[in-house]
Length: 48
Image (cartoon, rainbow, N blue to C red; front, top):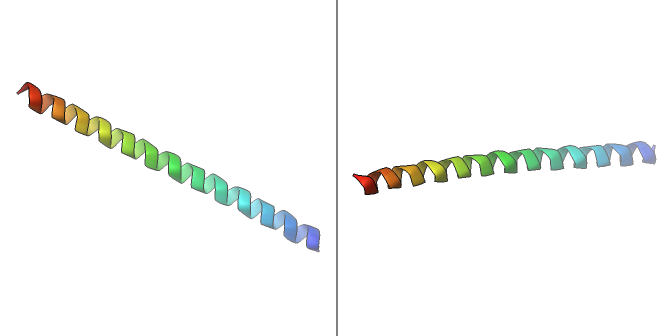
């Protein structure tokens, strides 16, 4: 019984970590895309 609880606890921790890593990756991609977009916008304004 205790072994099953331990296995489920570890499984839940692994899934939680994976979800957190995926969320972090998505957030960083959005941040980089936004910074790139703003950088291009500033470049265009400075040329005009």
